[in-house]
Image 1 (tube, rainbow, N blue to C red):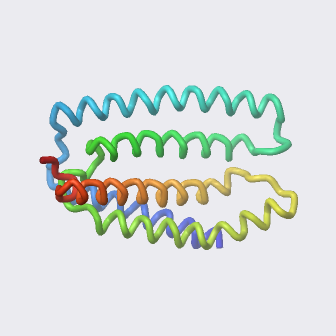
Image 2 (cartoon, one colour):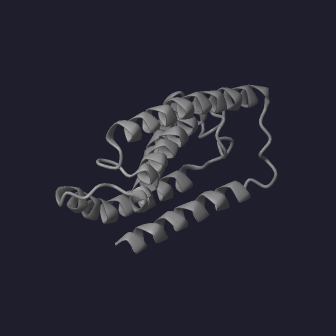
Image 3 (cartoon, helix red, strand yellow):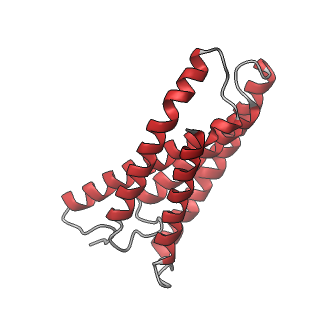
Amino acid sequence: MLVLGMILLVVSMVAVMLCVANEKGERGYDERQTAVMGKAYKVGFILNSVLLLLAAFAVELWGDARLDPGFLMVLVLCVDCCAFATYAIWHDAYFGMRRNYLPGVVLLLVLGTVALAIELPDFMAKLAGGGKPDVGDGSLLINASWAFESLVALARVWCLRKEGHREGVEG
């Protein structure tokens, strides 16, 4: 099951790369989007610093008893990336926000959900058996991040449509 989850993770990453590659030179951001991306990087950096301090404190406090440090670092990175991407998506400054990206978002949501459905039972059985999460379970976190960010993007598309806008097109 882990292998299938990793394959779905790679397919998701290729799908994102293809979405970015299909922009055909339209990657330039206007001044507002550049400012939003700067703010998103700032939020991500501060959050990353705080989470890394908390992770170091947790490892120091509990040692390897509850969480593998590698798993904890993947968790920090996934939470940080989700915060960055959510801020950028919600302020229309994420890649692909200037064109119809709904099919790509739906694809990532489906892939992330399928990967979670495949990996989650093994992960829960591992925890129920007294095991602890390790860095090998990081693909579960990454797939959960894909699914979460897809839901955020779908919510943004829904809000834009409710306001009478096309996906990713302001005013």
